[in-house]
Length: 111
Image (cartoon, rainbow, N blue to C red; front, side, top):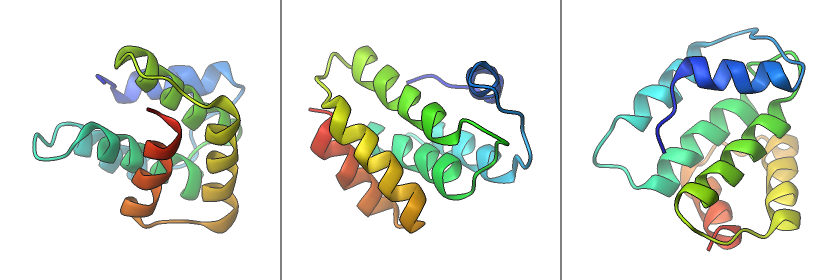
């Protein structure tokens, strides 16, 4: 999935948010360019930056969920919408920072 910082900011702005801190977003975007990482792991880095670090004033969970849906669509994968929402809420609420755990959660609902 091709994603730039401008795309991320634009999508979040559509959900009513504004950037508060962009250091974790910059890192997550940088990880998208790493050819050694798989697609789910790249999405997991993006999720951690958005859901745990809360870089936006509003719409963090909606933004993360949007990118999971976009990922599934671009990769022609099926997605369990209820489960993806559950995982987004859980990662945010429990401050799950472990990339492998986030990646596993994504893999369970994007098949």
